[in-house]
Figure 1: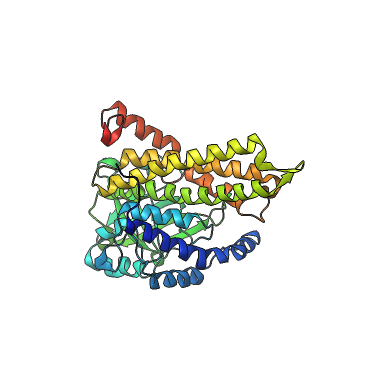
Figure 2: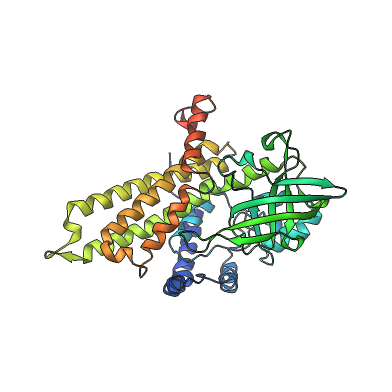
Length: 390
């Protein structure tokens, strides 16, 4: 059993780390200044400029198939890259990506939606969550009613990431209430903003914010159905599934950077004539953080490895998401405590992380939903204790 990275994995990770250190981290003071002034950390043109710089390094479309100009990287490699991106709080991500379910599009839809999204010419959002349907996505109510060659959409989606910036939305709507969403009663639609939906900003405790999307008699052509009619819920779960290992991978990078800040502070900050690192209380917080960080790392890498092996990743990904999200919250809390009052200010990124990572326990499946999946898999015999080694 070999836990070492391959030469290729190490080379890719180190190249991304060098890019983040040289091109992204120098922007951190300005990002903090803007966010203190309630401005976006990066505007779209600045994000685009960074993405094009990364493209020159060969980093474009991490998960995008090669036929569309992407890298088609394995999940483990993507996990390692997301960890490196997490080491900086600058809201940067590599370009050349599109929602994974957009690859189910027809050739006409690919020309209109997929290819421009990959090139950064269009911005999408995925809309399944509703005021009464968060963890219970099958309870969606937004209705799509057939009217000749069109569908009429009425209802609301909420907490939609990129909903304020997107020029089109992938909307999962109820098309056959009698069947129910899980049994083929929901369909995914590609809906341009120009068709009439509007977004409303939702202020949260984090930076930026999601949106509510309002559909009031929005007319969508039948040709804008993504996939097949009745496939909406299945596509929605496919979209959500990818976040189960990328989100906690990002959390590892945050925890690594924050823990190093705590170590640096503890070895230089003195009280009563000695560095606070000599205090057992500080030592134990650092030890607990490193132990949990390392445990999360291997849970998350295993979930990505499961994807690469072509195995069903849901059980492993749920454990990685559950533990990784909890881990980064505990680590950042300890790091803030070690920094004392300074950690609570907006001069350092610690309080920003404190707000940011709290969301990790909620979106793309709450802690409670991950526990439900994990326990159900065991109780129903879908998996064994010990997973693939059982």
